Image (cartoon, rainbow, N blue to C red; front, side, top):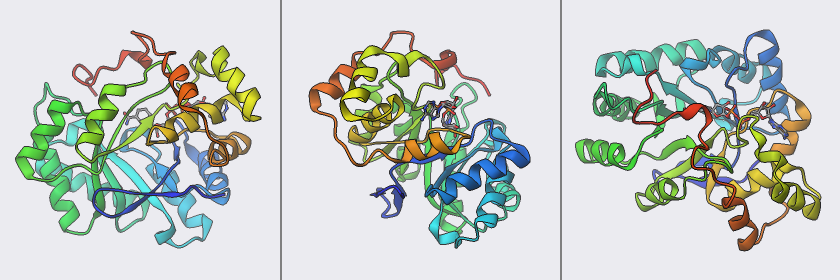
Length: 277
Ligand code: NAD
């Protein structure tokens, strides 16, 4: 099973579900990413901060599949927001992964108190021109951060990867991205082990559609036009998370899931305006 493709604002295609790799590490990690690839995952999400770039690169090589089959994403850490540092870091990540280009490269966090994200964005724009990156995007950006980089460079991000799960629905931010033609990706789409999957509405819908709670939540993302990147080390869960394209939730059911939102639903209280890497 492979995920259908979605067109980005720059004309490139992105698989509708990806594999997160936060805390997937070491030799076992390579095997875990490899099983996901063999099962059909093509969008692989890593980050310099996760220490998983090397294992993702190794799993790609071991798969024996052509590079062109993959959609590889990684992210710029905050301490490399200066223009020259960012350009160096992109190349360093490519060397670490054994790749010659990234499909998508994101600024991991805006870190507005440091005030360098526009400089970092200019580096991504230039790295794209140099052919090091196909699509460029951001993560955890709020509307004012988006407007600032678009105004400074004339280039709109293809993707904004933000925290979304049933306890943190982000209706406003998803609409803000859409208004600018930016695709929303969801990090921690399953709530990273919070109680969302055991909520009665999720359980009820799982029973109704003969699906698992995780599949209901991932389908909710998909029908909202969001690309989720669930992390799983185990084949059964990986397979489940990719098998969400054969059923449809009703509008009322989507809205019932939205109602699970909590005022303090964020994982680890990570506010993009306050977060410090
Ligand atoms: P997640 O929501 O993907 O949840 C992962 C947890 O859910 C794991 O404990 C896993 O065992 C469990 N799980 C996975 N599939 C399941 C299934 N089918 N049934 C039951 N349980 C299941 O959380 P995450 O790893 O934090 O987020 C996903 C990815 O998002 C990360 O791995 C990373 O790549 C990315 N991420 C990005 C940022 C950012 O700032 N851009 C921040 C955090 C994570």
